[in-house]
Image 1 (cartoon, rainbow, N blue to C red):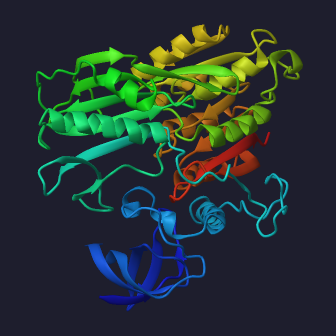
Image 2 (tube, rainbow, N blue to C red; image 1 turned 45 degrees about the horizontal axis):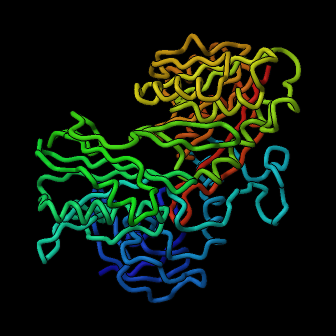
Length: 463
């Protein structure tokens, strides 16, 4: 057992402490707390630990809602106002340390600067802390009574812990998961057979589910949706059973063994209807994403007002939406401009399922001058041109170096960069800062009670 004093929380969500020339990254702690910790992992003189006893608690500490909170949302231990404050502080520190960029002191680039005191950097939220996730992925574990349970992996561990559901998930997801779990136990599936369960929902409260199994079993899935209809008031609209080999990642589909009902959902975002499937990338917190999308559209120069009331100024808009998924950002921008005014949008995406849905969404919304392109972003460099507006919403790894190099070569007039990882965003913008000015930055709490931070930066070329 090690006594420690926590200095601050860092990007990733842990507290940091130094003791006897050793560095500790500690879960379940808040800044200023004095604790006793046990080590979880150690590598190269750096210890990962978790608090066992809180000797001197922070005034911002609260009781967590769930007993498995460390697996899904380790920041349940702090009040929500403090969570938002910490997320701003981490962003300011990360941009300075990684990108050499000061983002928290310039009112010119931070909307609502100084409105609430302290740093001008603001974070948007709808204040909903639970029930906001429209997608969950569950594992499975065998309980002492031999029954199969839903499970999450322990933080930093290979061990799985049984759970009844998750408070972050929308209610229909937890109801649907319970129904599928009952079916699993009725059919006497074993933990060895099971890989994962993905359930998605929309604002209407509809849900689709995909159960991934590691063996080609002959299972009778008929009636599962009908039975769930009775329990969930007709909101479980599609179920699929997927074979996924023992060696493949959890959500890789090798073969579809059974499909009943829909294999997609439809969500309406800012007046744009969007179809997406079980494995499509889609924002998990739609109400807060819509706040970010409004800022994206304003940065492009369109806004999300009805088509007849909006018109871009100046030359025709040439918008390239990289990592576009099913077209959420690009189609919403195109829909706000309309089919005239000389706006063209290219959607660049490497996932074939997402591109198929993007093409369907173009037709669904009757939008012209939009094209969906199946290609990795780093192999679609020719679309980055001087007169283009480039939109990025990359995965956590950030931008490929080839993309950064092409931007510096072509110097498109504006870059709109939405990120779920402020560390890689800070890295990328640090590489671009000699050619670009930051004109706008704002944070969004897409993932309350977790350390994850969403950040929007708008860059304009200096020349």
